[in-house]
Length: 371
Image 1 (cartoon, one colour):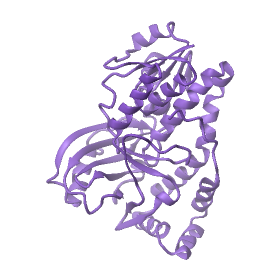
Image 2 (cartoon, one colour; image 1 turned 45 degrees about the horizontal axis):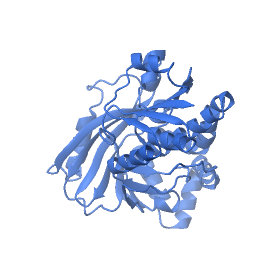
Image 3 (cartoon, rainbow, N blue to C red; image 1 turned 120 degrees about the vertical axis):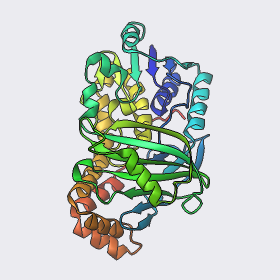
Image 4 (cartoon, rainbow, N blue to C red; image 1 turned 90 degrees about the vertical axis):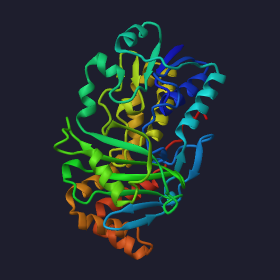
């Protein structure tokens, strides 16, 4: 069997490694050099508690996250789910090195156009599209609009400055005056070390967004001013989207969608590295099982995501329906050190308590990770 993989991000690289370990011939195409063009907070949230600890490129485990409403609330999320702060460029370049060592042909600076993808369909048994959102496949099959039904729009800066007061923690701060239709909406400060951080803002959008409705860059500038970061040096800047709903069809002819191309970005926190890696491994397992495996690919992903999506849906509903004062009280309650306060908060929000307990209590099958 011979497969092509489009995109050398986490999903594409994990898929390439998984396929190579099954003695499948793999051609991996990346439109830039591996590790370039990354717009990401660079923190893996292992939402299903199934991932192995990253290797080279891991900066540190994140023990505590600061959630800010009216005031900051520290929360030891790592007690419940792992978080890892990465240098994604180093991590992905090391994954590519491992893939080459296993025989994967890695083609950098090789952009796959819709026309080239159509020709490739006759050259490969299967093609795994990890090209992001909107995917190359969507331009052939005319479903690019699916990515814009509801999506997260993000803008990020990589800053050099003084982050010693926050590091080694990370911070997520919710915007106080954001209307329900833009929720979830927040900004983040993710220090990579005491002197550098990824700082960005995100909001939820349905359809096209005009600047006179919402200016994400201005929101981020206001946040930086409030955080005392206006003197920080901007090293990089960039933006992008992530569909906040899984696409209805993940298989088109002999093409399978993985990662952001499949719409696997979290609708709540915008992360997608864990799901990209998982979908890449599951897609390879599916093609190795033939048509029966491919037909079951979407269902397997949905099974992995069910409890996480249920909790995220409840949380997003709170963000959209509660006033900011009530949402702040919810944040204060769930992050309280007192078990009795946390319990009372849960009893006041039984839907969130139920989905949280189900999420914490469910153990998913650990896939055959290639690294």
